[in-house]
Image (cartoon, rainbow, N blue to C red; front, side, top):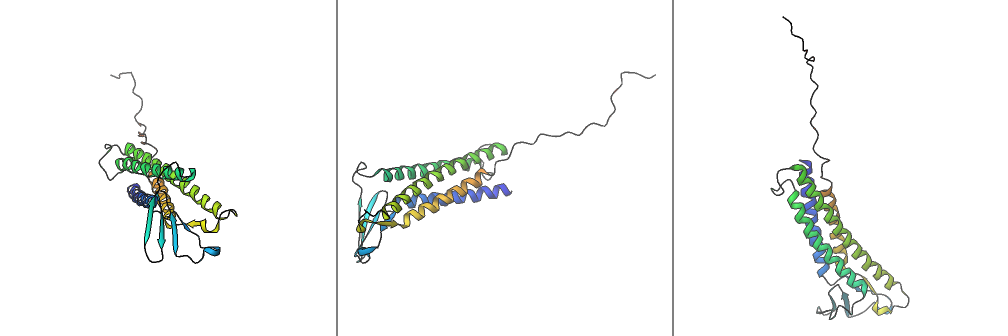
Length: 209
């Protein structure tokens, strides 16, 4: 019963992690304009994401522009985009595999050990997906920090962390927690039956008349 509850909790956390990864990947606020130096007072706030860049004006208007060509993007952005897509696909696959092995479902047969191993496999896939997203977020974060402290970067082109990157971080950690819970529910195997030793004396071949 405890394993069943742990599986449900892990599956729920992984679903929430999938939502966080999708929302974080779509939103354009991966990095935003840093208000430092002469750029403290400005009428336009710039946002950049994995798919588009946006300009938010003080009047409330927002204008977004999708990146025209993939070849014009830097390698870090392309790698981050690819890793986030892989993380989302792996999360969907992991949830599908885990759902077949959970004790509250009828898929995967009636063998509890086999179902638990299927759930463990789904949990491992979810952990791999979470690691992909963590690498993507960490790579993008390090680039923002490196450019911010680079003295040769113009002040008006410095960026800081946006809301989307924190959402993606949260989705990754929910994913890895859910995958770990699902992977931890696998039993060691079927216990071998232990038969008690017979107390009957050994039969004698002699016949008494």
